[in-house]
Image (cartoon, rainbow, N blue to C red; front, side, top):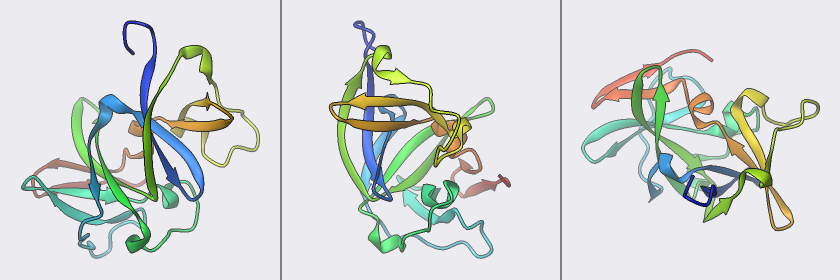
Length: 161
């Protein structure tokens, strides 16, 4: 949050829904790169890419959220994020259908997610933001991507959900 108490979020679309992650967690947004499939990897792990000389996994949150996976070639971007895994900060890629913009939200514009009827597990959601006339699902990116993580170049950890 900045001095005015506003949080900055990168917004993106995934399966026709609007999501956001904290800007501080985003390293870069890449055009889709060649993703190398890892044999016998979990369904949510689409494969790995070379990012600045390191091998990082690329996750498809559609699968994590229980939505049908789209063909990888349909993704418009890979959002490279820093996540917290235990005591470590790790780098991981996340497929996005469309990356939109960076927005600012005040704490008063963010509410807890409803407990009934949510499409996404509430442990994966940090809150629901309101921006204009749209609702934005603000992800707890550490929980959403906690299991497809790279720890060092060339080493990958794939824990079960």
